[in-house]
Length: 325
Image (cartoon, rainbow, N blue to C red; front, side):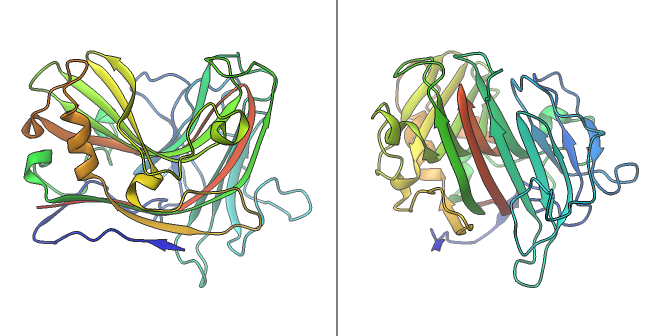
């Protein structure tokens, strides 16, 4: 399935050094469970000679992944990764997380990153665990591939005519067990999201975590949350200066939401994020700066989050982010 949003193309700005997952190295950095400005690794086939442009974030992981624990052989009988036509280059896993990198093939030329996350029995109730694939952005400036792919200063939102995010994804597994509670902060749930971080150094500084909900188990559990397939958005989840967060449903873009399906069913998205971003910063709530010329793209992430005893497997490929002026 393909979902497209067109952009007039005059001049473009590439926010990524390479389309994700990495095709040139097939290696990834690994972030610690809390941000401290450093990355572990790289992990993969050629860690001693590569400078990957992408990393795995494992925020609040109760059992951190070991960056030196990558396994290169994955026999079908014992391999924990999803069975695909794309063979497994390497994988790393433990009780709470799994990352598999599948090679490109003639039928799917780009590599595929598989993210599996679970809270199991050891994630504290009310604590969110995230497993994201993300480009090495400016907050990791010490690394060779940090920063955008294009030279020069990134354009402001006011400079852009559109901001195109494209990616290929498949949700192959979701399961939720009620260990922590019902509706409220301790509910067991899982979701899949694509996010872009916006930064404002003129007033604040301020940060806006802009997210697109691709799937959320809560709407299907206890009606705690509206269906992400519905065309709704501009729901703020961080509202305190200087850090803000806002969700838009994938249905807001007239696009289909992901649904757990095995064997995998791929959906290719091409979305113009700019109009909804401008709506978010012009919301005139919570002290957020509404001047588009003060905001720039600072980074992006895509993956899964959960609380409690939930589990989710997401496949990702062909990720790109380009601004058009």
